[in-house]
Image 1 (cartoon, rainbow, N blue to C red):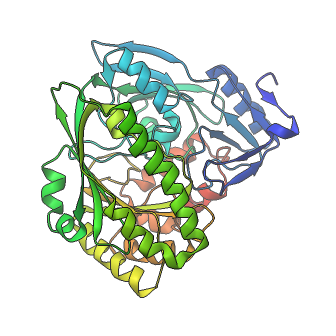
Image 2 (tube, rainbow, N blue to C red):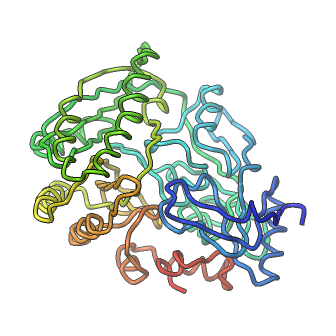
Length: 440
């Protein structure tokens, strides 16, 4: 087929973090929805499974396959932007950073973003990528329409008005409903955010948690284990004028200190874990306050060049403080050495079928382990605490949950499975990970 290549060098793949790997029978690099459909029909006829892949930023095996992998890099065009409605359609393989640049050129912006923008638009929505926000968080919640190639090779446009069940299931589906080839976003006129970042003691942040999350448009914090300190970030809309960080300060603080120097510090901790508490104390003391005003996507997102593994759980917002207190005690009790801060964000309740914030105001707690260090005991112990508080795992980050737990956690889980059964009865888009979480 013209859309595939079978050279051995192209038939291996690993994700960004390096913890997931594939060796495929075929690789397709389609440039149109029709070529995607041709690839899917051909694979199904041969009894092969199909998995699309974008930037590989999922820590799970969501994109792993030994069948046909569809790489979406050639499907990355902007199809249209309507200023009257704010609707913007981008092809599935477009990276979020490129979408943000194109939106800015049009004087438009997404309402909210996660904290990185390396993912493709389809990968970001498919795993439920979110930011932090008092009134908005999930990228998938900003989706107004999808173009999807189903298991029979049909190309279907869906929205809340057209094929609504398919639309609801496909918005967050971990690639199991079909191959998304285009995404239509609801956008708004571009806006500025004022970012106020400052170190605060953990006790103060937890005591003021409800105030901080409800009185700011966007609030998040990072707690440095083994220390009493956090780095907090409050982003609020402003009329301006823009006051971005100087290039020199941005390079010094965000590139040199937060990436290059932090990578070196983590490597020291990996070689000498006993030094991690002392290193964290030094790192937390080095924090300083800063305030700046910039284009929204530049404030929402950061660049991270160091690699790690991550687990994140969504909790009912009222459980965040007691759960974090338990994590704090657990790290001491288990004598763990944790070099990367724990990240806490917030989201309002929504009604997306598989959104981690479905039906409840939510706090996200994310745990990280630097590349090359064993995360097992830390993640296992933290996960037990998250589960005790009704946690829902992020679909694209490490966790141990399976079908039965998830079916209880999501009120519309059975509805999602019914759409999956109807659209992909032969499980063309399945792999071991999706069988674990959605059933065989």
